[in-house]
Image (cartoon, rainbow, N blue to C red; front, side, top):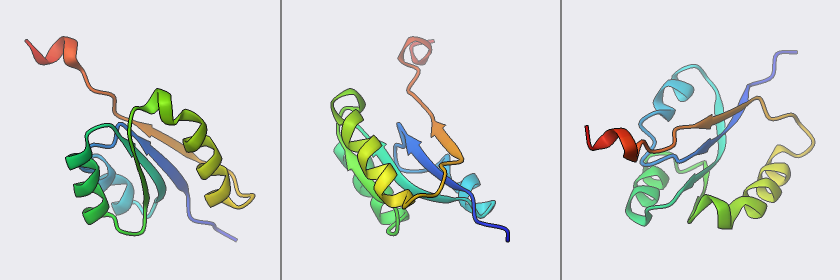
Length: 91
């Protein structure tokens, strides 16, 4: 049986990078974004995905716990992380 791949999205912003995952049929079950406005836009764009808003370091335990709960015994296939590049953004 072919099962759908599952992913979590870290530093998700409004979910632009997640468009490719969705196009490939990958189920993003959980996302995390620091900036509230971006997390709200992500929630609007992906209403079936659980969004955790807040600092990833402070939310680490909650991300792991909720991911395991949402996986319900299945394996996680992809950790999609698109961290910001402040050091390069000034260039």
